Image (cartoon, rainbow, N blue to C red):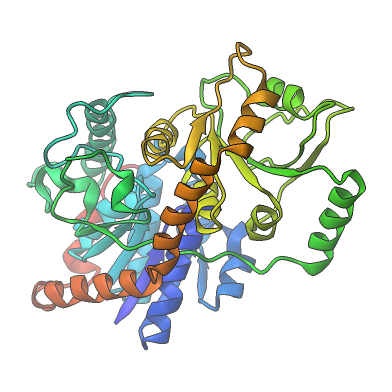
Length: 406
């Protein structure tokens, strides 16, 4: 089977799909990756063939920053790459509307690799879920609207969507978390499956790790790992970070992530980094402070580390609420009403918080996410085989699918 991986190229989206792709290749499938040219070295380390999206008209089309604006470009890039590779199945990321529409145009099955929690409407239940951010209904409607706009530009608006009102799920949506992170009593849509963390990251450079260790050893203070996501329209966390790590008993390693305008104070015990990996840094820390994106949350839980979470937008409020319900995280507000150092001290010393993180992390670590994901992908391919054989994948039969702006 020929499989095209076409996730977003940001590490939090790319690495889990590469974990599944590596397992699929071990099983004998022909797996290739489409992504931004900048991630070519990472994909090479994963041992998979790579095609640069820019060569297929997909500049910015696989960036999480631009996901809501580049759907048509992503659609065309995936369409062309799938034809060139002769793909039988696509694997993409949540939020990749262009890839979903390309799969529909080519009549190919598509598996969506999601986050650690479900973002969209539940099948049933969940009515009492507190909302730290926007509602599930609002998030679902807005994303479906963006998906419909890409379908229209691709010339597919005149026919019913292959997946009905569940277009955002593809044939199957894989969640990388644990059922305990979903709202109690809520039922997920039928095409949603939990597979586990899908952990993989590039191998850290030993010299870089040693330099960080040397820096941390000079202070000797306990380490908090901080992983920043996008601020969206929220307030910057930097004032609170400077407050927490200036003259206190903790030091921080701050992964800048996708945030902008870092502002560590000159006398703060803060080491600012930008790495393609985070494992050794979480290993070194006793607590993880994050905006609440899946990559640092799962990395913390897999190592039994408790969390302090300060969410902004997107998945961050949903995952923060889930982690607080599960007893593995505390809320770290941006408001200075409670001293930041006191919040960190309380979380650090909370044995219940740490115990819950170890239990949930143990369940996640026991799940062979790559094998589970590969099993589901093979099942989807098998179920779709008759339709695939009946479908003509030639350029002539699908020339209509290239309509729209170029």
